[in-house]
Every structure is written in C-alpha cells, then in structure tokens.
Amino acid sequence: MINFSRRGFLAAGAATLAYAHIPQFAFAQSATPIQLTAGRRTLDIGGRAASVFGLIGPDGRPGVMLDPGERFTVDLTNDLDVETIIHWHGQIPPNVQDGVPDAPLAALKPGEVRSYDFAPSAGTHWMHSHIPIQEMQMLAAPLVVRRPEEIAADRQEVVMFLHDFSFRPAEEVLAEIVSGAGHGDMGEANAMSGMDHGGHGSMPSAGQGGHDMAGMRGMDSMQMDLNDFDFDAYLANDRTLDDPDTVPVEANGRVLLRVINGAAATSFWIDSGDLPGRLVAVDGQPIEPIPGNRFGLSMGQRLDLELELPDTGAWPVLALREGARERTGLILATPGAQVRRIDSLAEADAPAFDIGMEQESRLRAVTGLADRGAIRPIDVMLGGQMQPYVWTIDGKTWGEHLPISARSGDRVEIRFHNMSMMGHPMHLHGHHFQVVEIGGRRMGGAMRDTLYIPPMTMATIAVDAGEAARWMLHCHHMPHLSTGMMTEFVVAA
Image 1 (cartoon, helix red, strand yellow):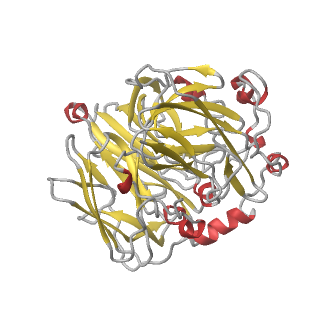
Image 2 (cartoon, rainbow, N blue to C red):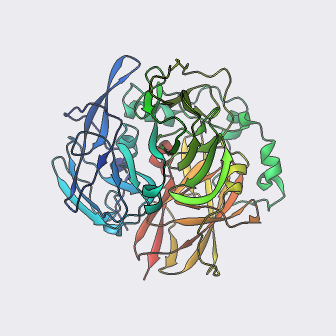
Image 3 (cartoon, rainbow, N blue to C red):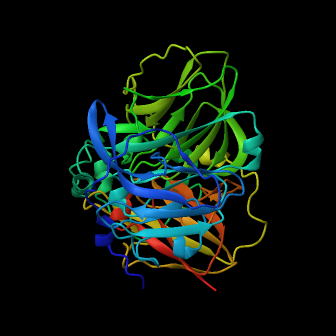
C-alpha cells in the first residue's frame, strides 16, 4: 500500500525567491535538459502585490513549449522551502516520473533536483503540483507539445492559462471551504447537500430520473452547488481584466487559442464574442471541428479554439465563471487598435457548466480507440456532501479507498455515477481514454484525460490499460481532492 497521506497532500508553505511575470513560455532548443524551477514569483493583481508559486523556465518565464519530435528532458529544481512534486498533466510518462507524492517517489526536498526524460504526448497540456494546497497557490504552468501540422499551419498560437486566486493564505481558504463557511448562499442546494450521496443505492437507468439528459437540462442551477468559494480574482495569464494580457495579432489572421483551466475550484465558459471560432481539440486531442463562439471547460481540462480575425481591431476572449458574474480573459489586438476597458463583472450570471453534458455529447474524436470489446464494465460511484465537507469514490476517501484493477493491455470501461449535487472533473493519470456513453447513449466521443461529470449524471469511458503500475484517479476540484476524492487504477502485468 502506498503511503499517501492527507497530511502530505496539505503540506505547503512560504518560499524565498521572487520572479517577474512575463506571459510567455520557455522553449526547448536541444537535447540539453530544460532547467525548470519551482519557486516564488510576484504578481500585480488589482494594484496589489501578490506572492505566488510558479514553475519557471531558464529565462524566468512560466511554462514549457516543445516542437514536434522533442523529448521532454527536464531538470526540476525545488527552490521552495517546502517539499513539492510536479505532475505532468495529460502526459503518459513512465510511472516513476508521473509526479505524485510517494507514488512511487517521495516529494522533492527544498534544494533537490530531479531529472525527467520521456517522449511527450502532443497537444495542449499543463503541469502542476500534486499537493492540492500548492496548486491553489498557483504552482502550475502550461506544457504544450506542438504537432507537425501546427508548425505548418498559417496561424498564430496563443495560450490562455486560467486560475482562481485569493490574497488569503491557501491553507485558510481550504479550511474555510471545508468548514462550510465559504459556501455562501446556495439556495435550494443546501437542502440537498446535507444528504449522503456517497453510497451504492439504486441508480436510475437511462431515461429514468436523474440520469435522463432531458431532465438534466431542466434542472435549476440553484439545485446544485456550483461554487465552493468566492475568490478575490480570476486570472488569465496571471492578469485580471483591470490589466489584461493584450496579445498582438495580424489583421485577417487566424489564431489557435490554447485554453488551459488550471483553476483550483472554478469552471469557465470561454466566449470569443464577435470572433467566429471552431473547437478543434479537447485535452490536447483533436476532435471533429465544431463551430461556435462559446465553449466550456472544467478544472484540469483544455480547449483548442481556431479563431478567424477580421481586418483590424481588438477582440476580447473572455472566461466566464460558471453560475456567477465574475470573468477574466485576454485581448487580441492588431497594431494601433483601440483597446477598450472591460468590467470584471458581467451584467448577469453565466449558466452552470454543461449540466446535461450537451457539449460533451457533441464531441467526436478524430482518432478514437481501436474497435474492441471491453473485458468488463466497472461502476464507480462519486459521492459526497457539503456538511460535513467530505467527497468520496465508492463511498470511501483516500486511504480507505477501493482500487480499480485491470491488466496491462485490457480494454476497460469505467462507468461514473455522480450521486452528489456537485460536478466532478475526473482525471486519470498515465492514460488517455475515450468517452463512449453519456446517459445510457453509446457514442464515439472525445479522447480525454479529464472528464467532467455533472450532478446526478452517468457517463462511461473506455481505456486501454497501460504500464503495470498504480495510477491515480481523482477529482480535479482541489478541495474535493484534499478531502479524499481519489482512488487508484491498479494495472497488473
């Protein structure tokens, strides 16, 4: 049994070095290892200095971008005064390099350097601490691996990295969320949140009760617990709309916008406004393009949007906090264009994110899993409650969890049943999976590594079990993870 304690998850603290923010990315130039540092940096948020964590490249800029064929060859230095460990979200490294405390390697001690070397998966991915309290302190950054066709395409690439931020220490924020004091007025949700939704009781079949998608479309968002906490700011590339990241673009050009939701506890809608767009990839995996100007993503997920620019001008691309008025974003602007100020509060609340999985149901993989039968279906129950604040998988928290077992090479289907009144972005380490069923309806859905399961909803993924090892499966909502919403996908040889 891996010694993976909640106490270890919650470990965090201060550090000493400060770095200036520049919203660009460190590029690998050769087989020489990229020098990546977990350290401190200082942001200007609403005119106030904020000390946060960061993953800094050799030139002092956050994140890593690799060209086609480059290996992920990195020397990671822990320049914090606390232990840390970094997970390469969306990548499939050898298990020993996956980046989970004591699974199997211990976290890096202050001053320690650890080397990583593997062939990376192409697409829009990211990297972050696998200690939840540190991810809440913004120990995270983009990790982009370009495809050959993206190099050849006549378009500009832009990254939008989203986060939620509080001036208060992350330990205080998490303690307030867990105590229930940070939940605010949930309306009718509070009547539901006192119920225990973590058991293995009767589950409606497709078309009956909570798992009928038509019924979910009619669900009032006030019946759900959408947001645990009102953060002080919502950031795009470390900035608010008071001082947004303004990206120079060419008139009549095309932009590939890579959106990464690195937030601890916030889902967003991405709204390109007047710019016509196409959704072309999710979680770094190509899909059949879908036209539109508003798409959503939950914690840990990514979207690639192709945007067509008119002649000249300035165009905001906004990230709208679900169920609330707060928003952030960046500005695409041609040279000399006038950039107008945008209020950080919209006139009305944004809707809940993908209640009936309508968006997810539209996604189709360009290249899905090979057609073969699954060894067996595995039912996984997602449960929990707001009072007391405990979130479970199969009725258990981490440390008492019930591992999911498979053999390397087997096709396994996992059926998630969300019996709670909060949504759960479920992330599987070391694998890409395909969404094959939503609400009882079979489909050849998107390839992903993180799937959002709305309240009282059922969805099924198919995965080909990879390296024989213990891989984490957990909710990517950091307060849910920190209170135990994690299990293991144990692959035997």
